[in-house]
Amino acid sequence: MCFMLYAGTAKPIPRREWQEGSLDLPVSSLTEEEAPVRARFSSPEVQNVGSTSGCGCDFPTLQWMHDGGWAPLEFSAPEARAEFEATARRNMGALVDLLGTTGEKAVELYCIWHGGGRAFSASPAAHEDMALESLLDPDFHFKEFGFYWVSLQTKAEGGSELEKCS
Image 1 (cartoon, helix red, strand yellow):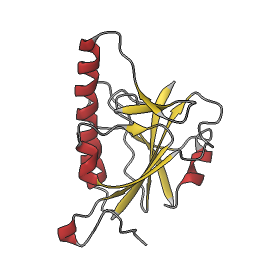
Image 2 (tube, rainbow, N blue to C red):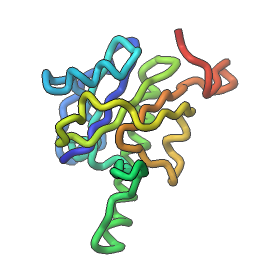
Image 3 (cartoon, rainbow, N blue to C red):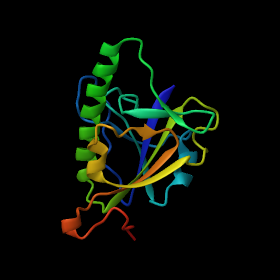
Image 4 (cartoon, rainbow, N blue to C red):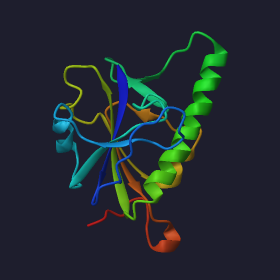
């Protein structure tokens, strides 16, 4: 199973192949298998944004539990958790940088774990409106089946977290 992060935008984010060892995040068009995820977005362009692992597995995540809550990934050793958290934070910084270059007022993000039968057609289990900088909060973790409306404008630029782009 892999964590998958999808971004909805008005214009395509430039595509970039994954390269091992690169700190640049890969961006790809949806595959035929992923096409049903497009229904979750109001934006005309939807793309897959990977982490430095190629898929989204190096983003900080919480997994949906059948009891209706979320749980963090489990690690067998504290060193493994610390290493993952450092990698995840580097990836979040790269994601903020990538989204900041889009020229969009806002970006929609949707997260799933690929491998489940209903993953691409599942309805969001959480909705959050947030500022781009909130992605850098050390306590922030993407929620599986989480849908995020991310404002890329600062209040000084006339934007607010709850302002929707038209």
